[in-house]
Image (cartoon, rainbow, N blue to C red; front, side, top):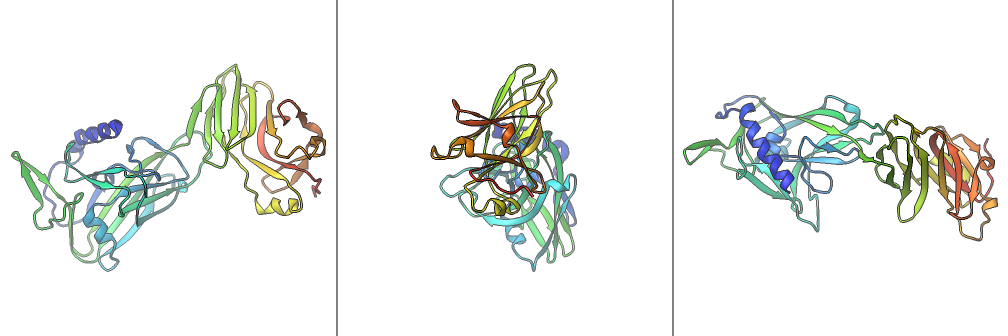
Length: 358
């Protein structure tokens, strides 16, 4: 909370340089999106600074002021168009939604309640109430460096409209005067055909872990690994249990790599193992920055009634073509793992039955 309020205060210092106080005349208006909506929220309903890095594969929300929310809800009054600008492939969709972001918890959303707000000039919305948002759905990404995305949302008036900041609804008076200072409370006063455009920029990147030990939650978003050079590094892939462990000695100048693992079967492979108890360990393809080959230990998924010598291990390429690697895998009885040497991660299947690789 302290970090968020500090960001809000910093924005209040910067905004007057970017947005000199003025009465809202009729006509088109363009704003940087947070000047109207405040800072964005992640999918857990937590507000974060627009300058922070957002994780991919989630939806980011920008809160609409009350009058803009009501206007946007009527297709008779306004037409809404969206545009993906820079790095558009990282944006799945942009749309206006009305929803509760949280049910049991109640987080506060700070939205500017007037132009050039100070710390006391923010309206408070709550995530457990129905609010209207611009929902920015982000794509997953496997890159290791953060990317900047840019987008815009344009509201074209079909009927005249006056829009106010935050929770203000007085469309007749465009300003308030407090302690001799005039604060403008409206940000749009348009006739039919006029446009209100909100532009946004956001940095997107995967969570990063540094050092010689890292963990990745199976089935969740992946992690960018920054290895420690010239020492043994370990990455554990775990959920309720440990699924796999990657161990390697990093080289003298190790590059970052993206690590993720799924246990979900693609249809192209599930049919080949239909009559087995096979499990899949689908890693995101990655080259390990090791001085030699890395050791991948796959935990034995089978009960004790299945002899490890009767387990068959396959790799699958991106097209679903199988390769039997059983003979190159060593069973570690002490750890109950199947171990193999590799420089790159791929998809592995452990089966209690032999299947055709054709």
